[in-house]
Structures are given as C-alpha cells and as structure tokens.
Image (tube, one colour):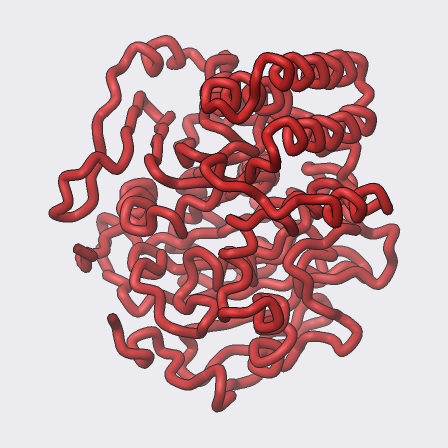
Length: 465
C-alpha cells in the first residue's frame, strides 16, 4: 500500500493547509498547499452553483504522443453525489476511511468530480425553481462549468477529457458530450473530447424494466406468477412511454420495483445475488411519499455497504462530508447540508427519468466519438440483459459488424481467472465485467483500472498486480 504522502495529501484531512484560489463574479475556488487538489463553485446560472473537485495525478507521465488524460466522473441517481460517492466510495485517492485506495483511477488519469445537477451534494440553488428538469438542462450547466474551468487553463486544455458515468449519469454523459461538441465547434469551449464511457447506465429505461422479470425468473427469484405481474407492469410502462406520459411511467416504474421486491422477497436491485433490507419499514416510508428510488437505494444492503464505509451507520459518508471534509474545503456555505442523494433533484427530473437516450449514443457514434459501454454481471437495476437490448436498437452503421465479432476474455495481472469479456468495432467498445454489481469500480477494482487505462489510452507505466 502506498504511503499517505504518495497522493500529495499527507494528513490534509486533519491538518488543513490550503491556499486561496482566484475568485471571480461567477466562481470561487481553493486548492491544497502543493496544488495537487483544487475545488470550487461555478455559478452556472444566477443563484445556481455547481461544486467541483479536481485531483491531479501523482502518477502523471508526460508523453507528447499520448497526452495525460482527465476523467470527468458523473454519478447517477439522479441526485447522487459524485464528489462524495464516486470519489470516496469508488475511484478517488482515498476511501471512506481516508485511507489510500490502491486502485484509484488517479493511476491512469487526473480526476474531476462534479456534484451534478445543481442541488446535488455540495452544489446548491438559492431558489427551488432553479433545479434542472431535463437532461439537456443539466448538460448545459455542465458545459458552462467546463468552459469556466478549461478555457483559461492551457494545461487542462492539453489533456483529452473523458466523460465517465455511472447509472443515471450515463444519460447526463451523452447529453453533455453532444453539448460540449457543439460548444467546441462554436469556439466557446476549449476542450479535447477523448470519449464517453457508460457504466451500468440508465440509457433505455424501457429495456431495463422488461429485463427484470425474465432475468429474475431464470435466477429463481421469481416464479411464473411473479414474472407475469412484472411483465404486466412493464407493458404498462411501455404504453405510457409511447403515449408521452413520462411522469406516469416513472410512477409505474416505482410500482414495478415494489412488485419485484415483493415477489422476489426483496432482491437487491444493485446486486441480484443479495437481499435488500426493504421490509415493512421501507415500504411504509415509500407510502409516506418518499421517492421509491431513494427508498430502494436506502434499503439496499449492497449500496449501503458502499456508503457506510466507516464501520457504523453513524459514521457514514454523509457524516464524513459534513464533518472533516467540509472543514477541509472551507468554502461550503453554512446553509448547505451535504446529502449522498438529493430527493429534490430526483423529483425535478421526474418527467425525464424514463426517457431513453439511445439516439444520443447513435449521434455520438456517427460523429466518430469513442463510446465505451461496461456492465456488471450481477447488476439488476441496469442489468446487462437490458443494456444489450438497447445497444441492438442502435442505427449506427457499424452495429452489425460489432454484433458479429467474437468476445475476447479479459484478466487482471498474473491472475488468469476470467474476469470478463470485451468486444470492439471502430469506435464502439463493450466490457462485460464478471462478479460486479452496479458499482463496477468497487466490486472489480483491478479490472476497472485496466479498463479505464485502455479507454483513455493512458501513458501510465505503473501497474498493479
């Protein structure tokens, strides 16, 4: 295990050392003493503020033919905090115990976390009417943030930007990539777009809800009766989507999750090999009006094991971000309380939640953008079965050739146990990650690190065995 100082942040969470960054009318930022970390707010609209956190890699390799990449990580939810969960829970330099993470993605790239959309995590609005209501609005805000960060920083402009997303973040990612390309073409954004990676991403809700019943029936978590009930609700969702009744489809999606939970005796939506903690208390909370998605997340044993990283329910990620991390950052407004998942953000996107983004993936592929799709084998909420279904709906001219290709097994280091499979044609790439649930980087960190190195074509020379 690397020593603490290898990440340039020795005792930084306990002895706070930082320098004030530049402050303008639209942004404010700070950095740590050695400049390896920088964070701040960008006012992307009047009274709407996005929080970002940039880590510069201590493993950086300067190679003129292969520039050092930067990864923008987008969390799901919608309303899930990338600054908290993606950073401390999955790929950042430190885990929830503030211990160095062996498989941090800093080994392959610089990392940029954003609490997106506004209202998520440390990001905030001064007026509740300013929450975004569509994926496109979120993408516009993110494009504004990127322009603020990149346009006046020549060093950042040299690094190709890879947008890597998880879960609902995949919808934000494809919308952002198209928005960024438009801004680049117009000369309002100085960024090199390296590619987009969609991890267990909610690209086609219809295909996912139709995958749940058959998948769980094959796994013996549903019987014929449960399958019939699940498929019936899925068919209702399809009809609502076709009729443009998107808010109703979101409500029916919640009904389907309830039915799946009941018929399967509470299968965990983030790892179908486990049970969730949803019982009478969880259902009562949902009946009181709590978002079903938030409730499902809260009662997922698999998910909570990732969030409650400090060993007890009291010492969880929210306590960490509202405590020592808040003290480190110093610029979080007093009236902003950090939450891992924002119910307000989720609710504001209720009419966009079930809309597909397959056409956006098609457009990116047609424009020649590298698109990588990766999926954890035991994920249910964004099951591989559903991902394969929406991928086959692409109109991209290279799809037939992609589907005809054979998969290549992937391993990690000297371990020759099959860790997954890979297929690629032109600018479309697909990874099947065995043994992983919804959160691939935490379940299979070695494979995920190798994968992201391949995605970014990182010049890093340090490997983990």
